[in-house]
Amino acid sequence: MIYKKADEDTDCLIVKAIALAPTHPSVVVIGEDIEFFVILIGICTFDNVYFLKLGKRKIAEKIFSPHTVLEKTIADNILFIHAMSGCDTTSALFNYVKLKFVQTLKKNNDLLKVIEIFKNPDMTPEAVVDVGNRFLVALYGYPITTSDTPSLNNLCYKCYMKSSFNKSSNMSSLLSCPPTFPKSLLSDPALAWQ
Image (cartoon, rainbow, N blue to C red):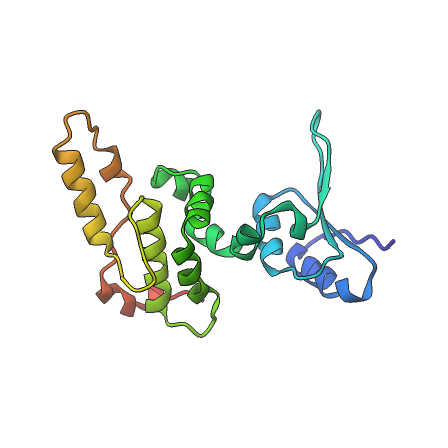
């Protein structure tokens, strides 16, 4: 067994270890950050790569394979789920936990077809924004199909109307409504992402 500890550039060492997976019987990557595991699950395609999460105090260490720990639907789309749910701060802003993002994806077959666009590196920023909008609309419980393009503005309006005429409403659905995204902002270079 070869053991390597990253003293400086952890990411580089991990990528090199994953690249060696086809030539080694097993590769075990050790880490603590859950985002680290999410990204590796998203990029790793080898069956002989395992992740080791070290234990702390009364919690035992766990070793697992990315191909067996998650349902196939979730594993295949984990990078999209991570991109949409973001960090815990983003999830809290929209008043949803990450599990809600996973459940939304699992319940909507049309959405699974739509987010294939997200995986295509040749897609335009507008197409990626459209996929994000469709997912956010589905996240808030509104139906989507592969043919229609829901509007976040309409969603916010519906949340507003629902909150305005509901005596018991505390406006929480409106406060957690996603921000609208005018098409004019798409041309802003600061908003472009790879």
